[in-house]
Amino acid sequence: MTILEIIENNINERSIAQVAECLENGGLIAYPTDTVYALGCDAMNNQAIERICALKEMKSAKTNLSIICADISEVSQYAKFNNQQFRLMKSNLPGPFTFIFPALSKLPKAFKGRRTVGIRIPSNDIALAIVRALGRPILTTSVQGPDEDYSCEPGLIAETYASTVDIVVDGGRGGLIPSTVVDCTGQEAEVTRQGKGHLS
Image 1: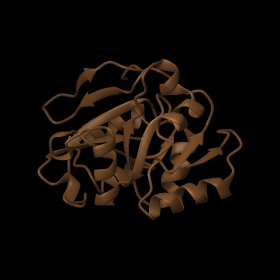
Image 2 (image 1 turned 60 degrees about the horizontal axis):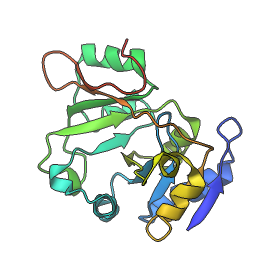
Image 3 (image 1 turned 180 degrees about the vertical axis):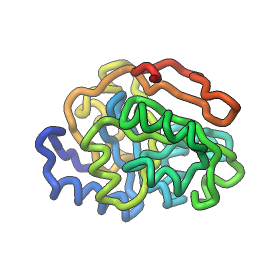
Image 4 (image 1 turned 45 degrees about the horizontal axis):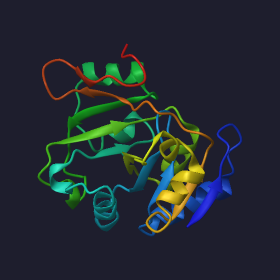
């Protein structure tokens, strides 16, 4: 495992490139977002997705999966949304929200059988720089540790996932409040989990 310290307001592009190369090669990372630390992999790599699902003991076929996109135009390649939902995203993203939309067929095999995908565009320059360097979305799921410190301290996250994650991106102490989840699959957008941030 490698621990890379990356400062959000002074991003080292060489370190970001190293993280993107790891993802390109099917690796798993732990990295900061605008809410909690997350585990990530290339969202187009089925084997990497299955590794994350196994790591978190998720049955991938029965678990909602979320991806981080660089911007809303990238979201349109993977999720179906209308003009009203576009305006809702534009008003709230980047930000601490996960929007649930009907999934489009461009998503890989691990998403097959699912009708929805969670969409995140976090207000965190490190996470967005990784996605841009990779050139496509990353699958994302929150880090879980035995206690609060293990969920938000990069050194302890590295300890927890020493044998399973390839790179821990140390962006400083993380948060403890997860994203607010907004279900956009019905007639009206519905907040199904109130987390960090309030929908405008």
